[in-house]
Amino acid sequence: MTAMLSKEVEVDDDVTGQLWTVKDRKKLAQLIAVIALGQAQHAVRIIDELEPLAPALSAAELFRGARGQMLIRGTTEAQKDTSRYHRDGFLFECISWIVARQSSSARTFMKDPHIAATTQGLDGLAIEMDSEKDVMIGATIFEDKCTDNPRKKFHSEVMVTFGEHHTSKRVRDLVANAVSLIRESGLNGSEATKAAARVLDRSFRTYRASLTVGSDISTPQRRKKLFKGYTDLEEIKKEQRIGATLIVEELREWFQGLADEVIVALNEYEDADV
Image 1: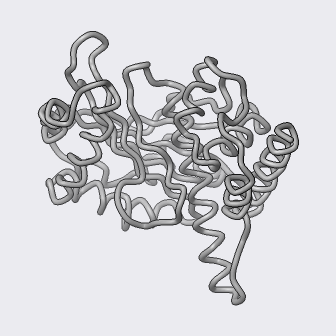
Image 2 (image 1 turned 180 degrees about the horizontal axis):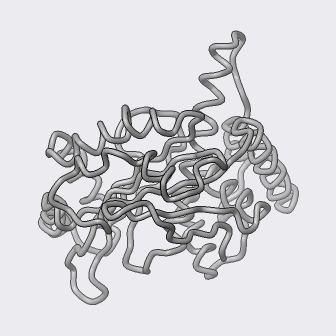
Image 3 (image 1 turned 30 degrees about the horizontal axis):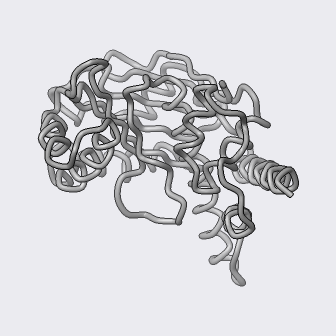
């Protein structure tokens, strides 16, 4: 099932560009609803068309919590803004995860989107295992930013995080997450830990920065300016630096509309289960 589209676009000689667009907004909202219910692994099978588009588990507490995640909370404007940023960040993280999942193999294991609001740890990680051997052949580190100021976010936050990974300052977190994902391939803890060794090697790593942008950032020249500085991640190839964009006008209104559609999907799922 394809809810999102991703096509390669030009950035420059050092960065591989991706442009994301929504193919089916209703299906996107329905998929995000399943993820918000804490069932990302079931969503994988839905994307692979191995299961129908519906939750695997239904309970009042699950629906209440998922709907709550779509709402803006707080009594002050500052509190409401923080709640909105967290909510929209989760929605964009789900979009990023869905795009990656749609283009991955059956031997790709991905970190689930954050259910709880957090600024800690990896935004996302995908580990690709060999189709036949218990060997890791690639790791992609994701940084997803839903923002009105994509250039600032890329320069001051995304590249700082990627730089820390590239210089091995976050290597323990990276290894721990890689081991957890590799275990899903069937390896035991010790075997998975040994298989994760390649995540320490830059040649096996890909970095993917994804940003919300306005329609003005729709040319190679503007994308090049947006992702300026990506080459600070040295000794890797163009294919290992991915700059992805989702063009969204009226950012907060767009994500509010998506959140409303997710709530509609949650209500429909719950009503169907009664």
